[in-house]
Length: 125
Image (tube, rainbow, N blue to C red; front, side, top):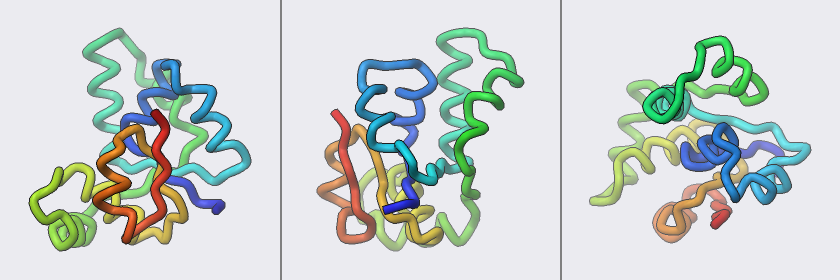
């Protein structure tokens, strides 16, 4: 599994150096790591609320990751698979499906239960 997508919660673990970071680094080692444009915007918003971060610092922090676009097709796919679940999660999973991602890494255990038939999910808690 070479193409690994990290959920926003894992991206925040990386950016904020949270307690899960050692396990996250182990999981992502020697992989091509992807994030969505949605995660970039959300992470920046959350970081800005909690602490001041310059645009250049944020850009450097996300530079190692390949950013995948969320577009109208992604949103349509998300609505196809979401049912009555969290649309934000479905958007992330739809982005994985569109980009043939091998593994979705998240801290949200519910995602594995709901979406594992669409993409392999690893939960880091």
